[in-house]
Image (tube, rainbow, N blue to C red; front, side, top):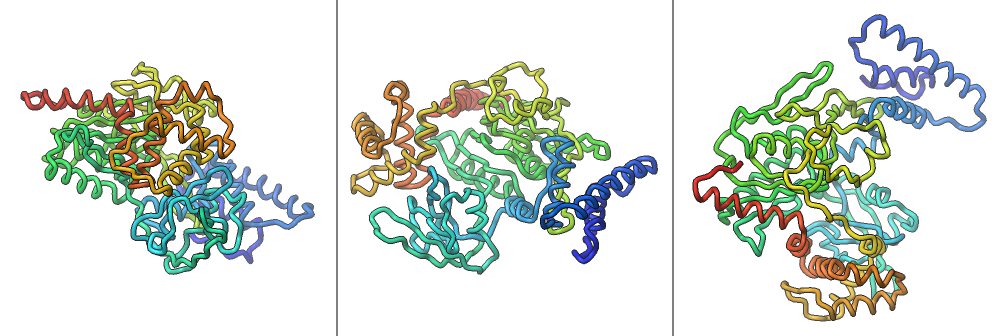
Length: 505
C-alpha cells in the first residue's frame, strides 16, 4: 500500500502510515475497535503538538520515531528500517553494493583505510592501506562516525565521490574523484587449507545471504575434490545471521535428505524445514566454531548439525537469537522487521535466549557463555567449551588506537625484508616498545610483560596482513587460536576413525 503524498494532513499521514504498516488486515472486530480507540488518542496528541508546539515539525521524523517506539514494546529484534537501513539490509542479502571499494576503520578520530579491495575503483586509483580519509565531498571526517562515512562513500552506480587522503611522507593531502561501481559482498571471508595441517580445510562465513550456498559449494568442491581435504572447520564466530533460506541450504550440504534442520512456530507460521538433497558432504567430518557473536542463521546451522551428530561444536555459547523476523517493504521506501515466529532445533529446543534483562541480553560477553548445561534456554551450547579467548585490555586499547596497524605500516615502509614465514620475536617486541615511546603511547609495563606472547602474535598478524593479505594474517591467528587448536585436535581423531571405517558422529 502506497502512502499518500505530503499534501494530506499530518493527522491522516500518521494514521495512514500506522494502519498500513502495523495493523494486520484480518483483525477481529473487538481488536479493531480497541485499536481505533488507541489511534484516536494518538491523533489527539498530535493535534495538540501541531497546535501548540512553537518549532517546525518534520512529518517523516515523527512517523519514523512513532514506529520505532511501537516496536520497542515487542522484543529486541522487531525494528523499523528507515530508507538508508532498508537499502543496506537489501545490499547485504543480495551480496553487493555500489561504492569505492575500501575497508575502512577508525583509529581514535582518524578515518583510516585498512585495505583497498582488489580490482575496485579505490584499488585502481592507488589508494593504500594506512591512508587517512580527511574529507568526503568537501566535508571534514573529523568527528564523523564510521557508519556515516560508509553511507557517504556508497551511492548509486556511476555517481562520483571526491575524497581527500593524507598519506605518511606527503606534506599535502591528495584529492581523488572516484566513480562508484558495484562492489561484491562475499558471504565467505576466507577459505584455505591449514598450512600446518593440510588435511584440514577452513572456511569462514561472514553472513548468510543469497550467494552463500553457491559460494560454499565452490569452496567445498575445491578443498575436498581438488585439494583432497579430509575434514572441515566451519567458522561462524561473529556471524550474526542473515537469510533463513541460506542457513537451510548450508545445513543441507552436511545432512541426509529428510533430516529436520529447523522448525518455525508462530501464530500463523507452523513450518518444519528439512534437508532436500543427498550425496553432497554428509560424510565429511566437520567442526563448527561459535561464540557470543554467532546468532540466528549461524545457530540454525550449528544446532542442526549438532543434533544430528554431524559436527563437533566448539567455542562458547552462541547469542541465542531465535526470533524469526519477517522483513516487509512498506511506505516511504522503508521496511519493517517484525517477529512472526520462533526457531526450534531438531530436538525441539527454542533457540531464543531470555531477554527480560536487556542489559544482560545485549552485553557482548557473559560468564554464562561458558556454562555447559544443555538445559539452559536459548543459544547453542558447544560440545567443547574453550575459555580464555578474550583479548586482554592492553591489546584492545592498542587496537582501538591503531597502534599495531601503524607500527606494522612503519616496519613495512622501512624496507625491512619480511618473508611470508615472518615470526615476531623479542627484537620485534623491543622495536615495538621503542615505537610506543616515540609516539608517547601510555601503557602499563607490568601488563605488557604479562601479555607479551599475545602481543607478539598480534604484531605478527598485523605485519603479515598489511604486507601480504588478510588471509596471511589469518593463518598466523589460527595457528595460535585455542579454539582452532581444539578443532584440529578433534578432527584429526575423526579422520583416523573415518579411515578405519567409523562414522562422523
